[in-house]
Picture 1: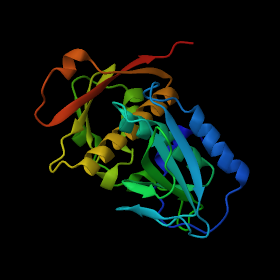
Picture 2 (picture 1 turned 90 degrees about the vertical axis):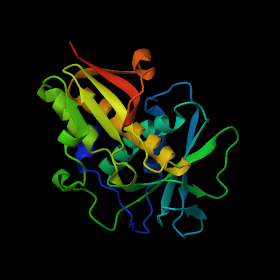
Picture 3 (picture 1 turned 30 degrees about the horizontal axis):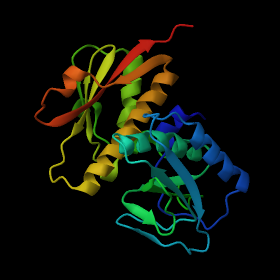
Length: 257
């Protein structure tokens, strides 16, 4: 199964077997991650896998999960680095799912002793072979319906609706889906919801979640044989919106062979 299919199958896993993953598969995960396209090409990122089969690692954070392995994501602190992190990481987690490995985003969780020069620990991923079911029925996903996420200004054709269905399933902190869409037949205006009680941890998780959702848009567009261009429009950035912040516009064009 490909990444698009994994969007509909993947679920967060919080209970793992203390079972070793083959060394070659761990190398393949890092190799795949290094091949994923960035949302912001100018931001340097680094990823490392930390083995924790014997539970020796010191994992600290609000949402920590005991796991046999952790993927630690490091990044330069530049504009858009959190959204970039989510955009890069989600295809990696979908890849893991296709290999039979469960995973879970751990917001505001850090592993002691894994600091790197020039970059900061942004987010940690728990992963390993699951004790529970790896796949889900997408119908059981706790997500808002598209009619609550979208304002349709024009009729969307089936490929665009499928892309929106994939975006709807993107994981987010406490499943709050902090995005809203204004939909035309060939573009989607993307907004981030305002935090009711904004705090640095909540805003950072919101931005990472937005990146995850944008990766779903990109993966689904490719599956639908549509070109996608994500571009923040100056005119939209200058406007003030009552209930959200404009992020970017996704432009779509059917791919011609």
